[in-house]
Amino acid sequence: MRSLLVSTLLFLTPAFAQADTIRETVPANKTSVVGAHATYGPLCEGGTIPKMKVTQEPKNGTVSFEQVTSKLSEKAGRSAGKTVKGTLVVYKPNRGFRGEDVFRVRFVMNMHTYGTAKIRNVSNRYVIKVQ
Image (spheres, helix red, strand yellow):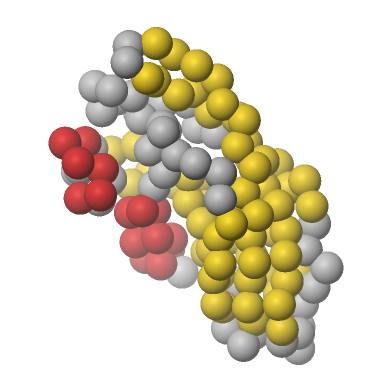
């Protein structure tokens, strides 16, 4: 599972990330990484690890968080290849459940825009299809 976690972290959210609805399909009866978040500044330096909180629990599973260290992917532009710490969002469906489950995760992150530091509250909605 560790290799799955590290490869998932490659799509880390940069400091200008937008709150969104995240849709994932996961296998029944297995724990799956459904999201990853980290911040980095304008000089590609790693930011503070976002503190994640579940604000709406899933009805048919559980959500947990795991902190990992990984390199940013090419989607990070000039920051690609830089090592940062981040948080994985991990979903585990209840045994035997198949169908759709929904939960929300909230976190606070620093956002660097044009040389200024701002704090941003992000609330992502996860829609998980369990097959």
